Image 1 (cartoon, helix red, strand yellow):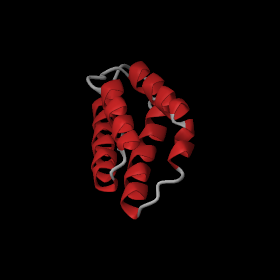
Image 2 (cartoon, rainbow, N blue to C red):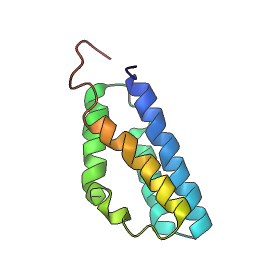
Image 3 (cartoon, rainbow, N blue to C red):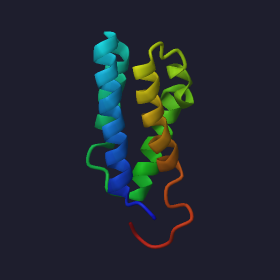
Image 4 (cartoon, helix red, strand yellow):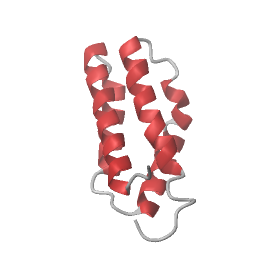
Amino acid sequence: MPQSVEDVRDEILSAASAVRAAARVDDDEWRSGVANRIEHMFAGITEVSDLRERAADCLRLYGGMGSFADVGTEAMAGAVNKLRVPLVRARTFALDQTGPR
């Protein structure tokens, strides 16, 4: 079932919140800051082009998520994976769809 831009955006925002929660538990200020930045990048997005561009920027900024490779805890690993999945999906969102979203 196709998702809307808003669905993918909300999944990213939810995942960023999960990263922040895991960062709080791990006392990881850097990842908490990353979660905040991601939320600011995606807040209010309604256009496919913005979703794709910001997902690509986010993945590029954070080394394709490679900078998260040393997650350390199971909670952070789960949160990072929860974030990676919608970012990758958003990067290529609607490439095979036609019409406005």
